[in-house]
Image 1 (cartoon, rainbow, N blue to C red):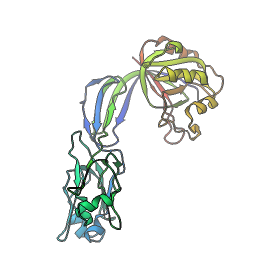
Image 2: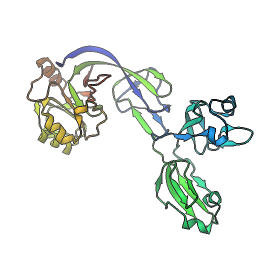
Image 3: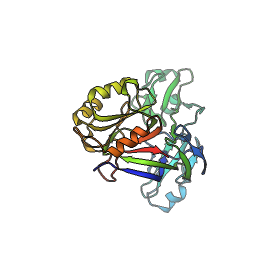
Amino acid sequence: MVNRIEHNKSIIRSLELPYPGEVYVKIGDEVTPETLIAKTELLDVQPGYFEVANEIGLEPESSELKEAIKVEVGQYVDRDHILVKSSEKVIKAPYYGYVEHVSVSGGYLLIRQKVTENEEPLIIDAAKELGVSNRTLKNVLQVKVSDKVVRGNVIAGDSKSITTPMGGTVIDISVENGTITIKPHYKPTYKQAGIYGVVADIREDKVIDIKTEVDIIHGTFGIGRDATGVLNTDLENANDKSIIYVSGHLNYDMLKKAERDNVLALIADSVDAEDLYRFFLEIIAEGVTEQINGPFSVTILEKFGENETLENVKKLLFESVGKVITVSSGTNVQTPAKRPEIYIYI
C-alpha cells in the first residue's frame, strides 16, 4: 500500500466509553484534544454473576422465574436493591451496579459494579455469617487490612468460608464486632476528545461523535494509541508535547532517544522490523497493534527496510511543522482492517 493524502476531508471520529456513563458535552459544542467529554464509574472488571434460579429454587425458562426477576437490562441498582423476589426468598444487590444482562433461560444476572468517589464502605458481619464468636474470627481470617480483593475472594473461614460480594480494599477488621470492612475501588474511566472538532452526535450515554475538517495522510503500519501534539522534525530538541517526523529511516537509537525525551509520537518513512520488535518487546506479527502499551506511538509511512516516502507527503509534513496534529497509529491487518492516519487540521 502506497501512502496517500486526502485533502479537505470532513470526518467523524466516534469516541466510546467502555460502559455507559456521564457525558459532559452536548451536540454543537466545540472541543479540543484536552476536552473531557465523558466519564464512567462502572468498573472495568468482570461483572458479578448471580445464579438466581438455583439460589431461589426456580427452574430456568420458567414463567415463575421471569416474574420473580425485578430488574432489567440497563437499570442501575443500589445496595440492597431487590434483584429477585419469590414467595420463598429474596436476593438483593450487594453493591451499587448496572444490570448488564438478564437471562431467564440461563437463570442468571450479570451486574457490573459502579463506584462513586465518596461511596461508603461495605461492612460484612463475618462472625455472624460464619456462625463463630467475634473473638474466634481472628483465627479464620484469610485477609488483612490493606489487602485488595475482588468479588468472590474468600475473606474468612475454615471448613465454612465467606467471600466478598464486591471488589475493594480491606480497610478494617474488628475482632470486637466480628466485622470486616471493605472500601470499594474507585477507578473511573475518563474520555477526552483527542482531536479538534465539533460534537455531532451522542448515543446511549457512551458514544460521542466528533466532526472535524482535516487533510489525511495514510500510513502503512503503526503501533500505539492516538496522540495529539506539535509536529516537529528535530529529535534532538524534542519534549513531551512533540510529535517528531523522521524524514528517512527510523532506527533503534532514535526510538531510545524519543523514549528519554518523553515524546508523544514518532512518524517515519521506514524502519527495520527488528528494531521495532527489540524496542517494544511485543509480538507485532499478529497485526493488531493499537492496544500495545508503549512510551509513545510510531507511524510508518512506507515499508520496512530503507524506503523514502512520496514527495507530496514530505512537503505537507514539513509545511505543518509547528502545528498541532493528531496521529492515529493503531493498525489491524485482520478484519476489520485499520491503517494508521495522520490528521492535519484545516
